[in-house]
Image (tube, rainbow, N blue to C red; front, side, top):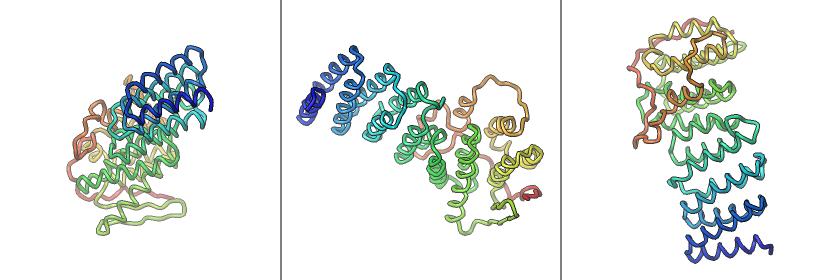
Length: 334
């Protein structure tokens, strides 16, 4: 057994005996010594083993502190977000209890490290996917949204299910508001594939769970669409995705005009649609000085107030008046 393994084993014994504070402090001291020596491997092994033992012992505060120290070491060592380095961080993330306060900071620091030393400016997609999935499992939709929108190809399914489950707590006519919370973030980050996947999964669950919901199937050689006579904004989202796939600015403008009243009722969609118009159709908008993700956060994710979500969460977007059935505009989907 190596010196480091002996140190970890000794501290695990203290943790098993309930000497949590002593073990935590000694692990910190030993790790700091290795950091000063720039012995990154030793420091990482000490912090990872100690943090995991403390988290398993339900000592979230002490374990979380060592987790944050570990990310600090990753930054100092300028480590790349390869499979091994990410694997340690994700193992620790899964060991956190759902209500541990330091978990959110750890997720943020972990994502920040991967952004600095990886190839993804918004952080590593795998880290976002795992974090978002854990938040989804713990029924924390706002935090799940933030991370799943920047996740992997598997994240769209998780996010669509989060939004649909959230929608079932609201009134039936609000379906499009929840679907948009999955679709718009993907469109605003240039991820059309995930936007389409999220739309398909959300609408498929909606159709399967509401047998009395009126649905019209519209098919052509190149496209298949479901039209919901009682949910005009959901039709708009489907047609918006079709317009983007075709690169048709004329169709986009036609849709915006046809559904203008409904979009105005929602209110919070207008800025997102302006951004989408510029990104996909070259329709210039005046510069507002707001970075894209600030806009996404305030409009789609609930902004700074999202953390204080009600016991029965609702979207941050204003709820529109209940609208009467409206047919989609006549569009040739060939």
